Image 1 (cartoon, one colour):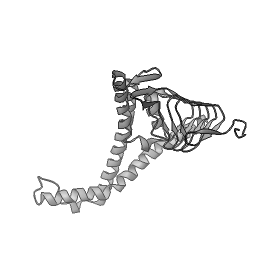
Image 2 (cartoon, helix red, strand yellow):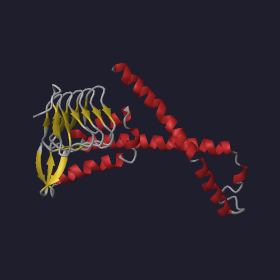
Image 3 (cartoon, helix red, strand yellow):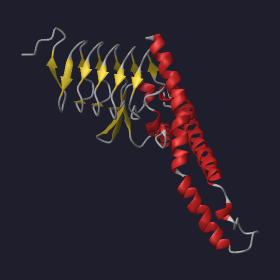
Image 4 (tube, one colour):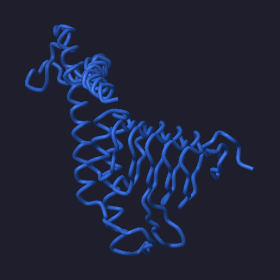
Amino acid sequence: MKSFTIVQNLLTAMVVPFLAAIVGLASVSGIYIFWKIQSLWSGNDPSLFMHDIDKVPWEQFAITGVAAGMGIMAWGITLVIISGLLGGLFRPRLEPGRYPLQSFLTIQWAWSMVFHRIALFFLPFLVPSFIGNTYYWLSGAKLGKGVQINSAHLNDAGSVTLGDRVVIGGKAIINAHLTEKGELVMAPVSIGNDALIGMGSVIQPGCTIGDGAVVASRAVVPKWTNIPEGEVWAGIPARCIKLADGSKPE
């Protein structure tokens, strides 16, 4: 498993500049059009803008495009890392419970969520990867070894614990909060070793998911649900469809 993680991280480090180059090359035509329009606007006055745009070799546009792609990628990664640092720094240290929506603690929680929203400008392009995991770790999440997070929607990361080899499916949502009856409800979410959270599923506050348990795709696990180890849950709201011994519940 350790060697797999190393290989995965190395591949991520290789893929990121490759994707940046693709984004940059795709922008070549846009860069040319931009400069062309600017040259037409400037007319024959070289002090306004470059007017001999048609004499510029296409290689120059390609280089400019790749440089722009690299710059965009560097901006995105930096944005995500800074957002994680600030989110972790300002995250509320709230005990599980209910808090009035109109309170300082709620404002503190909302402020911490702003950094997650900023990270969402680029985070969806960085999961799954060690960069995405680093963001969640900086935000306060407790991550075990070999965790695979394919979602950009682990909200309230500081209240989420993922055990070893947990897999979070694409677009799964994990919330450690909800609003109910004019109150902010906060409760941590804990997911045990080797658990699988299916694509598009929703985990609500206070849920505990045992080792090796499976939450099926698009299932909705209600708040404060305890899923025993090895069981499979599915549906809306989620219910056990297979016990740890492989039998069906009565």
